[in-house]
Amino acid sequence: MACAFSASTVSSAAAPLPSPKVSVSAPSLSFPRSFSAGKSLRLAAAAAAGGSRSARARSFVARAGSEGDLPLVGNKAPDFEAEAVFDQEFIKVKLSEYIGKKYVILFFYPLDFTFVCPTEITAFSDRYEEFEKINTEVLGVSIDSVFSHLAWVQTDRKSGGLGDLKYPLISDVTKSISKSFGVLIPDQGIALRGLFIIDKEGVIQHSTINNLAIGRSVDETLRTLQALQYVQENPDEVCPAGWKPGEKSMKPDPKGSKEKP
Image 1: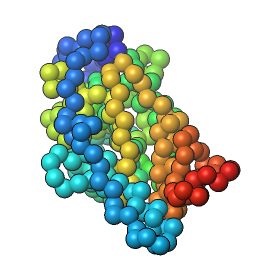
Image 2: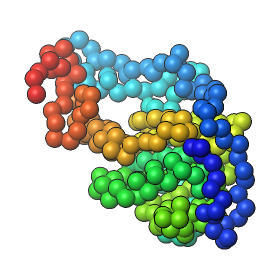
Image 3: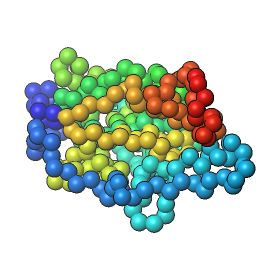
Image 4: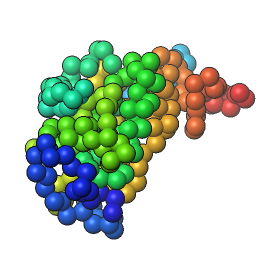
């Protein structure tokens, strides 16, 4: 079972946890309209004929339109303020406080005391310094209470817990954060495995959403973040498939895109 409680691992200090109905088979999900393929992104106006290569490159930056349901990528991330657990203490986290300061990796997971979730949460913690070096904060979110988060952190990894983490775990008991980011499964009251990369201006530049049984890759998250930072620092270049730091980028024009590495 991908997201079922393991009651034996719950610390007695934790508040009683609900017993969610989570099916082993993939649930039939109705994704929010904001993820509809029919809603396309509007590209910024292309540079006039004869304009500079840099100007033409900037036309590849997607900006969401202003009509109807807006996609999340290309728009400001929905702000929130919520309780979280960090360093075994309760703190407040406000997303907008990172604007102008840091990039943010915001990831949602279904429930505490489950099976796939701790593999992701501890993997991001074990690699935290790599994100810290490139000015990025990591934030985890689930619909559990801060008391459940605390109990899980205080439980040793060998016993099904997380141990100490190097980033906050946010409590979304009202489910408002999961809903605003379009990852809430309404009939189950838990979130899909959504992950969002938010730049220093507070704009969502990348999102992925996995179903409950599929864990995410820290390597791919880091690679995507590095590619984002590169193109923001080099606005006349784009990154081809699988690009990694140190590899050759591309010029977004007919001639430049055909240049050999």
